[in-house]
Image 1 (cartoon, one colour):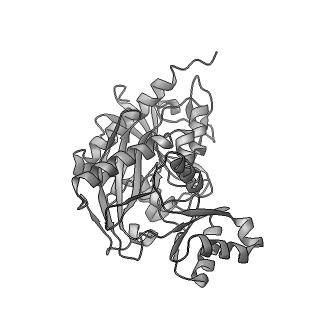
Image 2 (cartoon, rainbow, N blue to C red):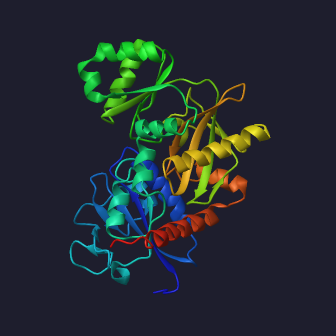
Image 3 (cartoon, helix red, strand yellow):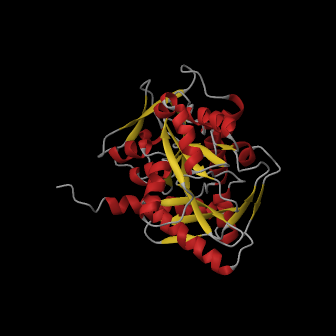
Length: 365
């Protein structure tokens, strides 16, 4: 046992449509993390929600999760005085299941939406990334946009529909979208990332199918007007003292940056840094940090924009646990800005510990 090393638990997988993206992100982190500084243990969460100790992301991508009897299932002990993992079969774990920090790499629901963060807070555990509020606001596009609106951050016009409204008042929903937004428009599940379930509708028939697709993923849907412009992203790093990266532009292989364009289509390209004038870059960086603060994010976040031909900037969304694969925009932007992948991991771990230490200062009696 290397007592001088920080004990980090890498947590990935999960009950989400972004399960596979999480495995890819975790695989990249696991392969790059500095073993001279960290003792790394892994926990993979299956799509059914079972937690398996010691599984490796790359192996899960190839072979899938073990059957119940074959794997080492664990759970987190919710004891703020002695948080630790225990085996469900009563067996032993390295270091009695104790650790110094959890590094969650779970994209989407039950990992990025505040639910996991609430569990870790209850156990009094240091972890990387945003807390409950920042995570939940960053996940729910409807509430996120409401907060951006309160802060007077320019964004596309949008409306929100509940699945029940669409199912029982289909005609009036379609009419409202056409009247308020027109075509083309984007239809998105409110609580998913990685472009899962997102469609671009050019007419009523496509709109109807897009709403059905989004409704299959979430009870709430956000419909936005389409902004013609460059898709630009900025990475943010920090807790209260923030840094913003150089911006990067997405040149998607498809009509928009779909799930396939992000993770499987070799025609998509990232232009880093984006070819923008200095004043636009500074405005993007400032707006990215404003958006980060607006949702009370911590640690890391990727903020997405549209920049029109006349350099007008529209804020699209923030992702509080962005993709972390080798081709993901978040780490690539920091690499271009001067923070290589391994050092970025170090800084995120340090920020997680810093946030935990700050929270311990608050009195509870």
